[in-house]
Length: 635
Image 1 (cartoon, rainbow, N blue to C red):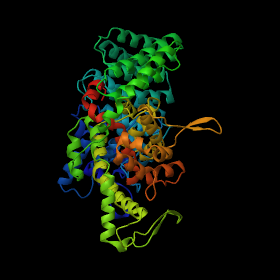
Image 2: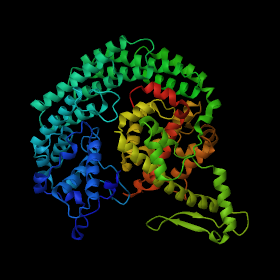
Image 3: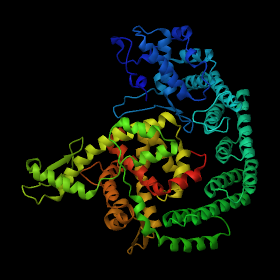
Image 4: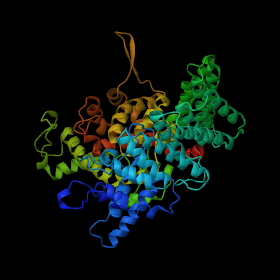
């Protein structure tokens, strides 16, 4: 976030202290301002670049010592705030979100802030020749006032114009490796255009033009054999049923049939899944089963290539078995793969050290921004997971006992830990005046020290790092689906849900991230242990039923197995954050509705989300080069 966005709470006069200056722009200002002068020569297809340009223009005006804002200044502030919003077309009902939000509610601009400024938005949209800016102005105007149907159609036309200009290389997408419209951003613009088209008229001329662009780019991606683009635009076409699904399925299978033997199995797996989805929508069960079978065999091929890592080999074999489920005639193949999986799992304990990672970074946010800012998106995502490691349990206990010994009066009496309503949640015993400190007093000191460490870590490292990621890249569910399918900590049947949780975490939607990821930690731990050959079920002799172990049972009854897989430090860190008291006991709070509105933005919940994020990326630390090669141009 720029200094300009940090200062958005500034106002034009003391009587309007609660109104940001960018909301003081009026219709007369919109009519009088020369607001296009900073962006006339900008060939960008990205709002973030426009945002930076307007902020630079405002900084230049500040340098001139202007104390009474002119109409242009107020409109520049208005447009800088509007272009700062995070574009998320995968959420059609909330396509724009804040660039940054804090626990106390203070935030950058969100759509509802502009309510009452519909005439200003419409006036600026009518005057601008920049299609990216016009698309956002029109879209936001309609989003806030559904009676302005013409603005929705104008937004559809503007989004399509952006894509068409990028096809002609007249404008370019930020960070695009090459010109053209076969980019993820183009599919995002068309996705939003079709969402608007569904709402205001599927067969109206601007929407027909957008639909034609989807078909054109899908066919272009298939012809060019750009695999990532094929997945983006075929999925977009299927989402809105623009074309005959059978045609899409045939197109993808034809392209795969002409692939060389050196093709990427994971990449082909994604494309076979697209083909299977197309045939399912076309109600062609035979071809659907064939495509699903081919997708599963891609996972087997990729698993076989992981001979250097039994952990990854087992992960992909397990996913292949799951992918074959329900396909007629594949029972024997599933049995064969299960036997192979059991053989592979015997080698997993020998490589558990991949879950331990040492990292030495400076504590300052400026240093984090410098390090993260020099990386591409894949490196950024890994760096976020590497910004710290779980503290050593032995050191925490030793430090707690040292503090108790040096300051005995701090713990001479026991204590009660209360919630915000005054209820006693847990009690801590007295430490005593000798070296034999009560274990509960030691754990209390550890909890206090860890609470402070989490606050420093979140505010000094994670928030600046995520801010850099958001500022430079559009991170969506698909970003994490592409990455997490390589992780041995992510169950295949929860891949999309976990990806959504991590996308929300990176985007700053911490409410969604906390409530998605926290319950899924239990499934991840069971999956990790199951893939190591451990039985994670309980058999009830009385009822003759079998149940999966809960997370509490895993930590109580299978702690040695967890430590063998995750290391003692990570196991203890997970337990402190999610289970034990004193401590945030995050899983209990989420499961029983004990969190309040601001709690997901606190350091405890953010750290919990980050810890799950790190857990899922840990298996990939030793496979970074292979992951980058597998992803190709996806990230």
